[in-house]
Image (cartoon, rainbow, N blue to C red; front, side, top):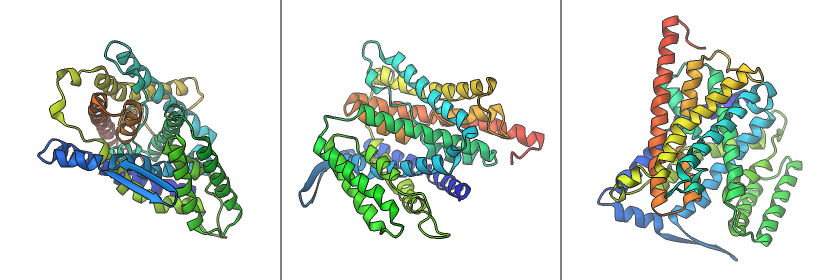
Length: 396
C-alpha cells in the first residue's frame, strides 16, 4: 500500500505540475492587456459568506489564499502523516540525506536573501519567500526532462519536498500568527479533539470529518492563526489504520479524493490570483531591487547549493547516502530543480511582504528564479541522461 500510494502521488504531481504555471501565464497576460482593470477588479471583489453567527467578508484573492488553499495544506498534512508512519519517511536510513538536504535547502536561500536585503532599500522580512520548493512543478520537470531517472532519485525529491513543506508550515505558524482570539483557538482545539476521537469509530461517517474540518477552519480564520495550520492540524486527526478488513484507510481515501482537486483546481486558481502583476509599473530599479535580486539568487543558487552541499556532506561523513543508482550529476540536476519555488514562494511571499511594490518585485523574482532553476536543472539532467544512454544504462 505504501509504495502504491507514493507512486500514485508522484504520477498526479507530475501530471499536474504545469497547470499552475499555465494559470500564472494567463494571469500575467491579463494583467498586461486591455483586460487588466477587469482582472484586478475581479481579484479585489468582496465576497460575503454568512452561516448562522459566522460571517466573513474578504476579496476573491483572500478567499483563495485563506480558504481554498487550506485544502492544499490539508493534503500536505495527509502526505506528511502517511510518509512518516507508512511511507518513505518511516525508514531512518532513507531519512537522513533528504531531510538534512531540505534543511540546507531552506537555510542557504534565507541567508542569501538576507545578505541582499540588509542594506538600504531592502526588505529583510521577506526571507521566508524563497525557502520552499514547488514539488508539483519540480516533479513534472523531472518527468519531462529525465523520464528514466532512477526511482530512488524521484523519491529523494519527494521526501525532500515533504520535509520542505513541513518546514514552511512551521514558519507560517510561527511568523504569521496575528494577535490571538483565545476563544476561537479553544473552539478549534475542542473540535480537533473531537475529530481525533472519531478514529475509535471505524464506521464514523465521512461527513462528520468534512463538517469538522470546516468548523476548525472557521475558528482558525477568526483566531488570528493562519488557516494553513488548520489544514495540517485537521490532517493529523485522520486515522491511518484500515476502516475495515482489507479496505483502505480513511487517510488514503481522503488523499485519493482530495489530491486531484487540489492539484488541478486549487493550485492553478491560486496561481491565477497570486501571480499577475503589471509590467508597466516596473522600472530598472524594481528589476534590480534587493527583493528581486535576493529571491532570484536564493532560488537559483541558494537552493541547489544548500541541497547538494548537504547531500554531499552527509555522504562524505557517512551519515547518509546518495540515492541508489543515481549519479552525482543527476543529484546536482535535481538540486537545481528544488529552486522552483513558484506556488509555495508566492504563498509565503504574500504573507511576508503583503501588497504594494515589494510584492510585485517578489513575484518577478519568484517567476524569474523558478524559471532559471528549471532551465539549469533541465540542462544538467539532459546531460546526465545523454551520459547514461552513451553508457547503455537506462537508469532502471
